[in-house]
Length: 305
Image (cartoon, rainbow, N blue to C red; front, top):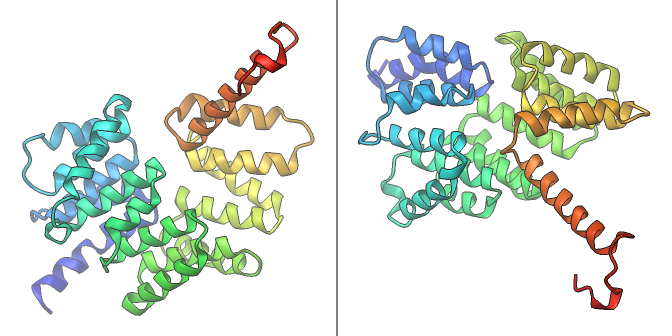
């Protein structure tokens, strides 16, 4: 067996744990590996970022770091410091003006993640285009699903399956595509998540995937049971709260639970896409109330919308 194969085998548990959302196990496995490895460190710090432990990353990866780990410092800054977001996006814009093929793949992955967070999926696809790294392909598929381009997402999945049909990322990508397709494909997606739960251990990522499948199948009680388990694991998890919002709209005849979960999202996830959209709509509503409310004495013909 080659030296490269040995390294891949040694890092399998680290990478696999990260991909299925078992971030603490990823960290534990990475810390067991004594041999220096840039790839190991990449997944170690990404797991800390996924746990919102940004200070660990910022303390250990200095601004002067001359390895691809610097991309992860920028990601931690982007996610932890609202005032730095615009500067970090500009930094990556400038980075990708050079020959993108000369960059380590982690720069491309982090750049795509940041662009996805910004909602600029076309820009993310532009930097991912032509890169056949399995994670880059998975990110392409996620971008396309967010753009409702299921047709193109199917093509990307076919490429992933040809490259490595049994890979964790390929299987998860199949599940995400199946959810988008809906119908009978929801059960196929559920079985993929269940298979990973059985082989390894349930994570919030896998359990929320199952909950989405249940909601799509109108199995609301089953979805609620899974989401209750998610709440017990982490009461502030964003995906769990979003799924509970969706579920409460289907199950509850009053809005008390919905409002409670919404308040929690607004309080705990101020920088999320949902909160940004909510605040924008709230501002628009307030503006219309001011313009058209009974206390406004301005003539209608004088109001410019």
